[in-house]
Length: 245
Image (cartoon, rainbow, N blue to C red; front, side, top):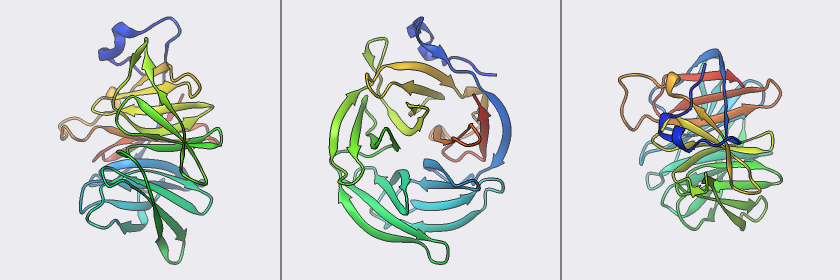
């Protein structure tokens, strides 16, 4: 069961789809994880990054058990943000630090730092699709980025009913569209990557834990294209939810 986010109800238009979902499974999630990025890793794991200065990590997590099999802490000056994996390379954003961190991974040795790349402005969410990386910075703007050079190819303003949609956060590319958490809300929006127009809304308020910190907002979208399942969670949430759309 799902609902349209009340705060956006009045802006709905005929072409704006209310994306409904069905809860399939509840999976355990580290309630101390200040989740900033989440991505499916093969058929058994998640790639997850956490934030906060002095507490930021990059992790490999078992889907079914929630067990963190590998983790590496970021240097204390970095506030970790979104993450994506391209082959054996893992790219993690930082919030204010102006760099993208690069990692490599081996099962025996875990995550190994493999350099940094400069990034202008804030880093929030990152995903890949249509041959490019897509990065959010907390505004209404998405950057389409070259996968090899990490240079910006173009900027895209995301709009809802003709107005810029601010606070774009964690991203996931699903079936040719970009899904994005809206910071400090329980809403996920679906974005056309060509026009920037939001054409769907998904509300997670029914899944949001009660009696939890106001900072513990929905954040984390991972798509399993093989199983056709969407995984969502939030900062400090004790659960990852497996949904069918």
